[in-house]
Length: 144
Image 1 (cartoon, rainbow, N blue to C red):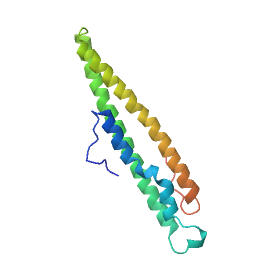
Image 2: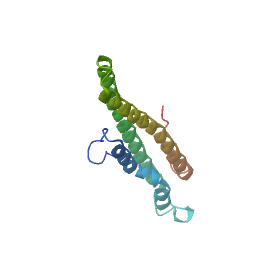
Image 3: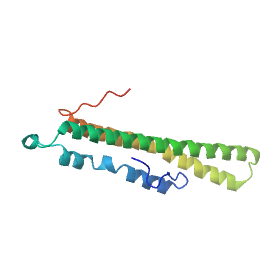
Image 4: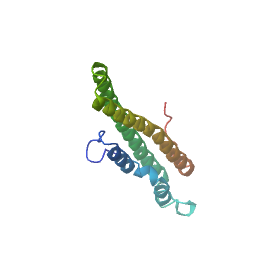
């Protein structure tokens, strides 16, 4: 799943969160997706549950990877800005505008880093639900 709009806006944290929210749609709707695509015992002959579970798993893993890359990309970008601002502050420690901007960027960086923790929780929850429903139809390959 690609980032909506092509690139993730790392400058504005509220937009960053909004894009992540859109990107997490598959995880938010995992229960619904499983309920509508994985058949119950009485309908098991009409749908290929193995293929359905495999496709859902691959889509979910692709979404997890793209979000992880997007978050880490913004963290790297913001870290670079913080580094530059620290250098400027070292040269001119009296400039309040630089100090204020540095604090703002450091706060944004901490919030972005906390999104990695949120991402881990979201991914774990989705995988747990997926495994509960698809364990008899499809076993995902071992990761790491």
